[in-house]
Image (cartoon, rainbow, N blue to C red):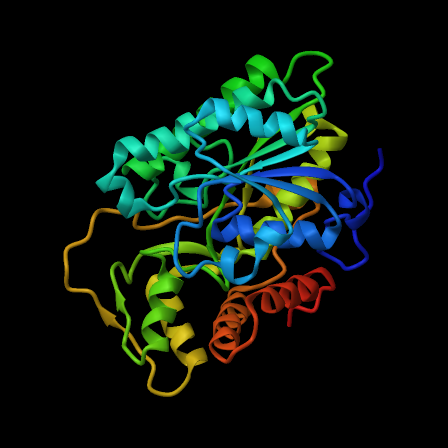
Length: 367
């Protein structure tokens, strides 16, 4: 099967591929899941979802009425029976596994729940996938934090050692190991029709994220209220990217898995260009300038749980083998994010704001 890329350079998603395609998302009520559901709907896919209720109030899922475009089942990935039943009923060709406990600080408060969700939930999902006959592609989403820390060393490649200092990072490393074990044990035999891959993205930003302890949530919440945000770790370096860039990578990867599963069944990084890895302070200062006169920030004087001081991803493999590249540099990613929240504060609808940015992205109008 020859997969054709879109006409716009850099947008490697093939719209024709997705039309009428049956897709199941776990975690579709979360920030990234809601964006992915809206994009898949624009592409014409038939979407099923399995998730707990939205993790925040407000939430992009509710404000953008994502439930209108998804055949949704409420459930916990820690419930293997309910999860397997949802997959059997949906009979998807493609599965994106996004359901997770996705924050570092809560993982210190509830390490057992974090491992149960991120590791046990992934195993439950993969076990359920073994019984879905139409299935052709599974993409398990983990994190750039799945790698063993290397300080300020080179950007992580997919072959680097896995690890994790905090429970969240360790749980994502374990999810990667479990995914690789299932791939080798059950999805790579001769004649297997299912391609199983994992995807590791950087720190994702974009409109509609209200999760606690996320930088953009803290910045936008404080600035909207006329307050100066407090930064917990201003010197920490992260690979920042707009949510649509890694989502494009996930879609392209799923297309390749569907066509040639075993050739692409491995781990993949989706990160920004090298200049997208900057400090928390640098992001805060750029957001303050975008927000307007008088905006600024202060250091948080309270003691904070330990987090990795520096992270960076090497996405060269995705560029060379998938034809994917990030379209939004850091300045554009921040501008799109700030304009989304300002538009919402100004009365624009969350669905319209998201659909407009998805359309601009697909057409390559990213300047």
